[in-house]
Amino acid sequence: MSSQKLGIFNSLSKPFVKLVEKYYPDAFIFVIVLSVLTFVLALVSTDSTPTEVLEAWGNGLPKLFTFTAQITIIMITAHALAHTKPVENILSKIGSYPNSQIKAYALVTFISGLASLFAWSFGLIVGGIISKFVAIGCTKKRIRIHYPLLVASAYSGYVIWHMGYSSSAALFVSSSGHSLEEQIGILPVTETIFTNFNITLAIITLAIITIINPLMRPTNKTEIKEIDPNVFRFSKSNDDEKNLNPNNRTFAQVVENNRLISLFVGFVLLFFIFYIFHQKGFSLDLNLVSWTFLGLGLILSSSPIHYVKLVNNAAITVGPIILQYPFYAGIMGMMADTGLINVVAAKISQISSAETLGFYSFLSGGLVNMFIPSGGGQWAVQGPVMIEAARNLNVEPYVVVLGVAYGDQWTNMIQPFWTIPLLAIAGLHMRQIMGYTFVIFLITGFLYGGGMLYLGSG
Image (cartoon, helix red, strand yellow):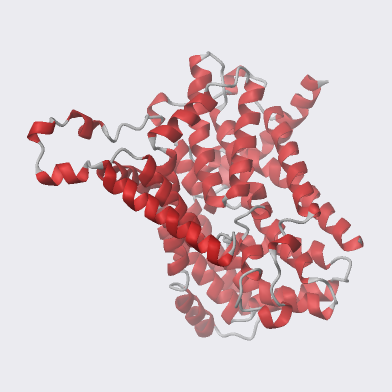
């Protein structure tokens, strides 16, 4: 029975793998194509002139600079934390655990999913790193692992991130003073991500993808592409400090290698975070997540200069994000300033009922995410019009919040933007994994769509 299932899912994944390898462009080309498509849609669907659409695009380019900086710092600090020696030791032990192919794919899926529920950035970073450790651990045991599928398994855990504690949409509407407070008030996270419905659906989804990913492993041994040993390098960024003769150190080197400094700054940061929690309650935003990773990384590094080198090594993961994010901001500008997003929302309202609005919020969230692959950025643009549709149909606001959140995480499986940091760590190209994540896209589409229809029927 298991071999039959294996054949089904392996056969299902093969055409998508071949399709992606042949026709999916690089992520930068992808955003350029989306920009042109949005430009044309704005011209066709709104009253805007070409000059007005161009102006909307240009004015939108810098609007996510703050958000881009937040994402960049999160990625770098999470990467640096994961490469501190104590965390690497933990990941190495985890990587040596699997003693079969099935356990390897399942373990990577499960760990990246849990990490994504904690924080979306941590899920991507941990997913990329744990993939390498598991692949190396399996190689040592002479267990042949198809590395692209292993990395795809890590990325598939990201399909539940918006159901977790870093949920952008849920955190937005739970924050005092948010832009929609007059319309819906403050929605605590107990009404969104901590509902029984959301928690149950997250557990079911994680369990299913943990089962499905191992079933997609190649049945033909010639199709297995194992990890390139050159991709993986253990962190040795503190070797220079260890080799320094204490008697020959300059004053600057003594200061740079004084661990008390990094410990002091790290503990000050953590003290500040606990102080904020004491003052405002236990709630995370992007800044606090960044300072948490930064503080822990400083504490677990061997010296200030060691941490600087960890950050330098992490910088490679954010280059493509910095390049592409202004273009996605430009797309946001075109959709918002020309009224294109209002046209989309109006169409959704016209075909929706009180029972189906959550379902169509999910579908529209998935569609908009292809153009604005940012949970926070997407909600900023789409949230107001979906809340207005909910008010018109007398639907509870939390329904569309969850719908948009599920749609956002769903199409991440076919939107290449967030594969960039994970693949930079894993040493693969987007085309090598997205055939497998397309299968996850199909399966979770039924799960989330069915879940929203069930929620609407209640």
